[in-house]
Image 1 (cartoon, rainbow, N blue to C red):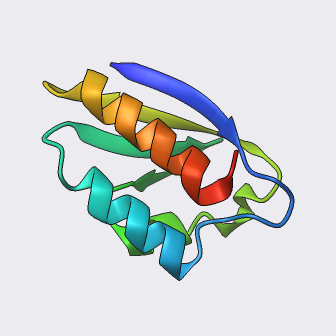
Image 2: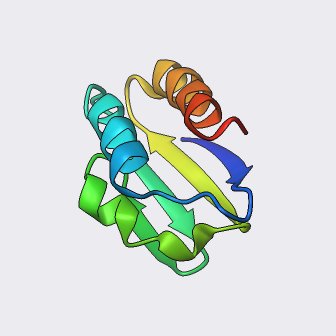
Image 3: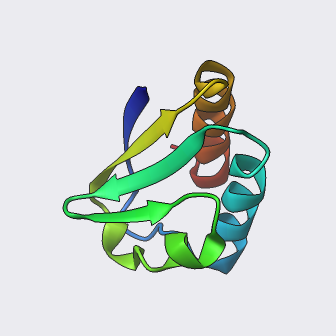
Length: 87
């Protein structure tokens, strides 16, 4: 299992475009890809699940990937989060 903590800037969150882009990329992997925010979580392979986490603005969240291709998934999805949100 691989984990990494990110934090959005105050005005950033998973609205439709970034949620769709991230979910599309996450779905390419066999590994489970989840976002945890306190007691809430989202299946990162589903855009609608990511959009429910709109309270992430300005707060830390954890990207968790578990499975056979977790190394590659973490590398590429972490880079994608940074690219999408210029983190």
